[in-house]
Length: 433
Image (cartoon, rainbow, N blue to C red; front, side, top):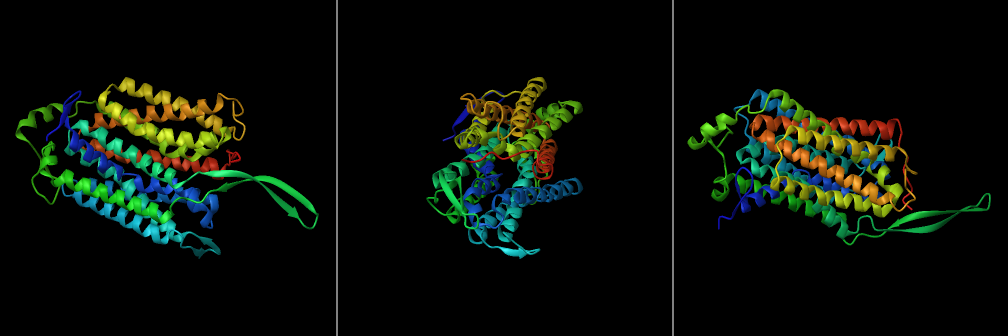
């Protein structure tokens, strides 16, 4: 049955909308899944809690993927097979998730020290897939009506939420604080300190990797349905003239309307939108993600985990809200990003005061910090989805540059985070217990 709902500038097919969500889940599910699994992995790996800093650098090295795709698009714009590229990266992602189950513990000696070489190599390929998805998934959505753009971002939000829920059921973060006694035999002095004791997970890391493998397969299946299922092809705005490339021929009945839409936005406004996308992703995917523990842990372990969970829940919810109440006003979007940036400044300030930030020992402290993260993330997500929906009206090239700027902003934010945390050492960790 063709179930449709109308909203704003057109109708959507609910089943196709759901399939696009499944396709979007594959965008960042692998890297997000690896990060939420780190508390269980760390005790078995030689790097300890330095592991995240290594993985951050590897993720940024993987930006070579979107760089190559962008160069290929600029050089062979009318010959580049978008479908083939997406199938290749999904195959690499699925294979890497499968191999991760067998090789995440494998270590080798590098420059005299043991390192998790197996995990590092596979993390590079997982990051290569997810980073490249930003510059190929968005242009692919030019095939569909603008209303389906929010579905892609709902899927991207679920790519962080679903692994978190599975990890929560696995027991990630469950711990108790115990008083441990250390005795200095030489001086005959006893030292007492509180140490976090993490509980054994309900199922092993290997099973979690198989879950990620399954999610990548679902994404590949959804992508296949969107391309070849007649039910989904009815929602295509454009049709291919040659199955081997992405040369699009407009439907006769839509030629006039598409021509009217061409360059409906001034170049200066497009530049503004791309600048805002860079700011959003440099904060949310780079700087803030690297200091989240410094801003939240001083308010307690529960506040930290609640912040992470609620932020991930809010992401897809806000994307759906952007579908119900679309916004195309540059002024409104700019105000949302400005407010989100102001809240980000507060979060960064509190993180710089760790382990004793403002209100850390007051009842109002944890709710204020949790609310700050959720509101900031909601404003940034709403702005990001709104901008992508507006740029969708400008066509495939605009979406490609949206993806490029997304990765560029994330790269700048990650480098800044690494310098502040590991080089300048401006942040001090709060004790877990």
